Image (tube, rainbow, N blue to C red; front, top):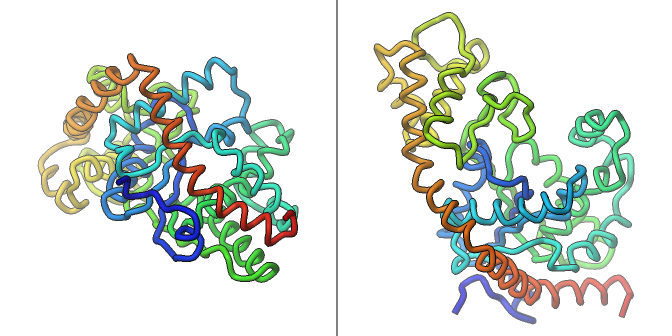
Length: 342
């Protein structure tokens, strides 16, 4: 029996600890995605009995995408997170758009959300500025869809990074607003904050590592070859002090390397600093690069293997969507009853 499956009235009447999280299909994840989110997902699927992970293809439309590119990105992202250790036998792994209740619930929740609240969210301001202040409606309202993603399954816990805390707070407020208006129904989801330090760009350690960074040497991808990883770390921006120390405010570049080293090895900051005693930053860069190579080599090999079997990847997502829909349907039908649709 699949552990995460909860049916009918059981799903409605019992408060089940349930994890929900999602990732946008941008292709192969980068080092920051892996350390900040996916690695945590792997751990959570071992600790909780009800876990849902979604490829958020609806969210991806807020930024322009060519259809062929989006289709390939969905498969590449799926291959990558499977290769990183996500196990469909221990979670529901599915594509968001295959469960239409996400968008239907988002409309209902959107009618409980005021526009000024959405306009105040910093990600709207940042991304809208990136689109020459011509942001689309989807970009403004996608935090409401995020809330629907979470609440549709009566999720109780959501692993988030620091930059998503305000969006989770919106989901919490929407759940409370719905409960006040229609009666206690949705659990108010709690955040599970990542313990990994935010991974920064290798070329500008004042900003986080990003897939969209125009500097190719700034971002380490999970599928990068050993040669590419070595080059990117060799070119990583540090400073003119050769000693390896950890001080993010005054030495962000070297501190970022220390954070990466600690995260990929599972050691503490103090332990990796002890290992780095006597090394200058140039040599330390290669130590970090080697640690990343050791971590990513088996993952990269598995990604390549999975990418050769598109039918398998599609089947995984479709099967996961069927299970997710079975869980979502009775919950959404009760929402329909509560708001007066039936």
